[in-house]
Each structure stands twice: as structure tokens, then as C-alpha cells.
Length: 297
Length: 137
Image (cartoon, rainbow over all chains, first blue to last red):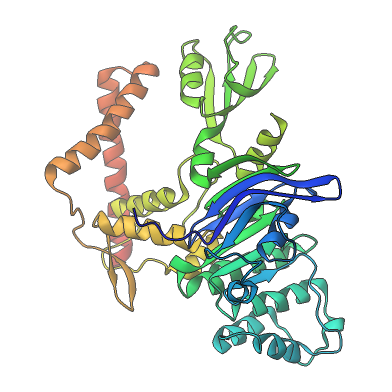
């Protein structure tokens, strides 16, 4: 098989700050054109992982490859093909928005002026404004323009929407979907770390949940929603005694039963049905609910 | 047409879009030759990955429901099933079997089930007629 080189490949990555281990034996692979989510609580090791991709930290064990290259050896070759939006965006305070973008564009091979203009209008930014007078939302807007105009093959987003108001968060995601993915969707890859999972739900193709530096679950998003289900049943009398060990979580309340399952849904539904429930329904868990279920079990 | 998606249905997002457009085509809510929303604004509006919409549209195209005119967008085709008769029957039989099994579990007898099928076809026909009349008006 002649499969394409993964845009990101992380094998058995480990990194510790002194004795505090931030990432432990993490492996994952991101294929071109995919939107990959790295989900975890605060302090789970997401930012450390991203910093290893960007050569801001050097892996202590394992290896990372970006476009098949080692970012520690060929940092420039890797970085000219990606853009990074960190949680805290910092610019030179004395520059205007226009000067900041011109400065950042000077490091790039390409800069799409049409996209820049379109995003200026969408975000209603004033090019003459000094960056130290921008609000947090406006700084994110400028960082997003700087990330998208070079049309990179990879967009690395580290907690990009935390601390922003709901309107800015919406605009952020719409811009990533619209302006970033538009050009060459097959090759526009996104790697996003977040604990605000619900707002990225529709964008995510595949994800890894990390907890205390370890990978807990890696799945395709559609498959995840098919496997993780909530089953609700109500019986005329108290619920029958059933073997429910296959369920991740069981809630009982009088005549009602609620199960969270991972993959065992169809068999359990069939078993419940045999006891003639008054009502029986299933629904998929959202990625955020899957995140909570995976960390609790 | 206004599409709705739900992350709680357990059906992959692209299939929800495929199903809704097929429903709209069957009921006449979407007429042959009518344009489908273009990919980028639809992806932004539903806040889903652009590739998800592209996948739904290419699935609809391979089923012969829509056609893509280069530079102009996607349109509902007039006479759409591109599939051979046996394949069409086989696809339908799978769906019917599911409904038959469900009817058994819900203790709906044969006659009542068949009556319901007639009734549902009538409902769809009524919808089509209503959409036709609206178009003429």
C-alpha cells in the first residue's frame, strides 16, 4: 500500500518537567486533510505535546514527525508549512494591526491578500489600531488572520477559544471551516487541543483523549457516537434483575433505568426489550459526554 | 432548504445530510433542477467540517440524486436513480425488513402494518401534490 505520509506522527512520546511527568508514552497519527482533536482536562499534557511538535520542547523519549520530518533537525522546513495559534496571543505592543500582519507576512512564502481583506471585514478590525489596545477577542482575530493567510498545510490550535466570548468562539470556528478549509480541503489539516469540546464537535474527524499524560481513547468521531450510547428504559413495575456489567454506568430511579454503554448497545437493548418495557429509547453521546464517560470509567 | 443535524442521533453527520436531501427530493420540497446550498456556506452554517458536506454531496452524486455542474454548483437531478432495478430492490428490502422486525416487536399485525404502509405512501403523495401546487401558484 502506498499510503500518504501522515502530517503528524507521534510515537511513544514522553516529557517530564523535573520529576513531574507531563506526557507518558503518547502515540498518535494525523492523516492529511483531517481535523484531529486532542482532548484533555487542564494539565493533561496537551500543550506539552504541541510544544514538542513545534520544537519549543525536545522529546525526552519517543519521537515526533511533522510532514515526515524531525522538527528538531529541520525546524524551518517544518514551520514554513504550518501555522500555530496559541492560547495566549502576544504581539509587539507598539505595532499597529497592519504593521503586525506585514511583519508576520514577511516570514512567509505566500500570503493571500484576498482572504486577509475578507477576514478584516468579517472581524471589523481597524488596521491602524495599535496591538496593545486590542481586546482578547480582537487579538485572537489578528492571530487567526496571520495563521490562515499563509495557507499552511497544517493549522495547530492550542486551546484557541478558551476565555473568549461566545460570538468570537463562533466566528473562530466558522473561519477555520470556511476560510481555512476552502482553498484545498484535501490537504488542509487541523490539529486542535481543547477542553471546550462541544463547540468543535462538528469539525472533528478523529480524536485522542489524554489524561495525566496518557492516551485514554482514540476514535473516529462518527464511530465514537455510534459506539457510545445512552439507553433509557421504563418498566410497568420495578426494573427486572438483569446482567448489566457490560454498561459503563447504570442509573436507577424507581421504574426507570438509564445505561451508558460503549459498543454493547444493541445486545443490551435487545435484552431490555425482552422484558417488555413501557418505553425504550437510545441516543448517541456527544463527544463531550464521551469525554466525561471515558475519564470516569 | 434548511438542513438540521443532530450529534445525538447516532447516524454519521454526512448520512443525516444525505437522508434529508433524499427525503426533500421524494416529497418534492426540493424540485428537479433546483440548486443545493453550496458547500462552504452550508458547512459554516451547520458548523461542521467542510469535508463532511463534500462527502454527503459525493454520496448523493454517486446515487444519482444530484449532479455537479462545474463552476455552477450542485443541482437535484430530474430522474434520479442511477442504480439497476435489482440493486434498488435490494436496498429497499433491507429497509422493509427492519420495519417488519420492528412491527413484530411492537405487536403490530400484518394487516395493520400493510394499512400503515398505504397510509404513509398517501401522506408522501399529498406532500408532493402540495409542493407541486405551490410551484404552479
